[in-house]
Image (cartoon, rainbow, N blue to C red; front, side, top):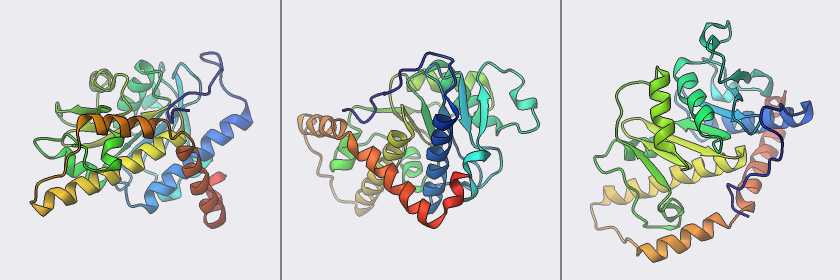
Length: 259
């Protein structure tokens, strides 16, 4: 099974039952806590979202100003991409989160879970004139031919126009390196998004350390990179196991994330 393969069979615009929604909330809350542990968050500025039905109209998102390490399942707010008054509500989300995630969910139904971070190494790569990711190890090969690169940064995403521009650029891709900004991952489950984000930052770390050596890179052929990328795509259980273990650790050490 492809790690990005959807398992949803619900009808569009049909909200899930309470048990399913609770699991979605807990999976997403666990992801916030885990990336805080990894030091990949940025103050209280980054955001994750999860569409709760196939059309992407309704989605969960972290509330404005809450630290990743304190997110609980019940903190996540349920938003409607078609609600033009969202930013006027008392518990309005961060404006950049709304404009970016809201438009991506509205325009890219495959992007069920969207994670946006400014992690150290991915942001460093996004700051280079050439932000491509040459295939130099298994992790960088995972993203061979799968990386959208945004080189049109014009300021913070504070309009639907900017959200629409990013949605068009993302297209059917699952990872977008946002030049001068950070990284955005879109997948069909929380597990897949968490796994993609983790491995993308690890790939960027290896690449930036290799660049820092000043020595030539050992770049594999496109054929080898393509084969390895496909092998990653067929490694379906990895993302599921990854999130399962993250939740097991948090269940033992920070069980309040589930509440």
